[in-house]
Figure 1 (cartoon, one colour):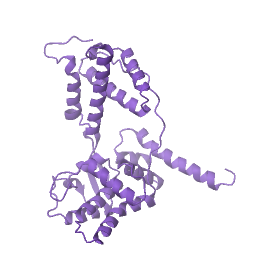
Figure 2 (cartoon, one colour):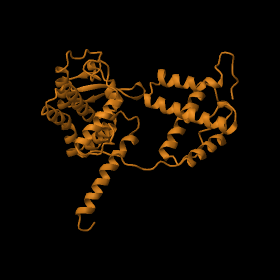
Figure 3 (cartoon, one colour):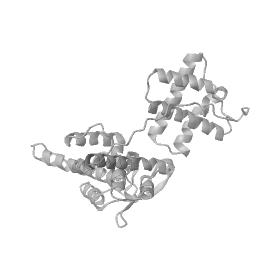
Length: 318
């Protein structure tokens, strides 16, 4: 291991260096930063309780992380939860190696449980249509009461659902969108994805129309450097992912659909419907902003499984 120089921060500060790197240089999502911080803090706490000493990151060995893995296994955590913790530790050591703080990663060769193969959940086209119509139906029902109701939140919610489904956006990408990044004449949106990567994504006429209808009901439409979707009519700040999740849950319940479905399932629905309609895999990969084609190929498994079921149910010699 390289010796510490006088200008180099001590090992106890290495996690904070890593967190600053995630935030300032890698531009990791708030969820990644939160999960990675929790993972390192959890390991630190376990090490302190087990060894009755602070963590010396440069002196740890593979067996330390094997013991930690056993401890996680005894807690009966899911395979995904365990892999998430080790993904954080692995990324941390890669960072330390790049900075010359350690020579190798003790996490690298720890054998983890294989991830369970889960196909992404998605809505059918009919279910998706019902969900997209839900905000305006809710608004219509509210107007039937004596209470005064503002149509702006419902028009905003409809535009949000249309945009996520039209563009296959991650919820964070949608919340960060600025008004000037929509090019209505070209019907494309400039999206800032993971790791500061930018891409252009087509946006449908229905989604553009829903956005403009929402803007027309605001006291003042957003400037080019303001968010596409505001948290409230009076607060001209971007809508939060949490508020989007809560509003989605409301509309899913109204449609008789599973209220635990997340906004990410709309992205799954987008990809599945695109491939079902004949879009090629590479194009869908680019629109989703996947770095690897493997991430996109999971949606082909969904369509293949459905085709198999249809065959088994319909073919007399199946």
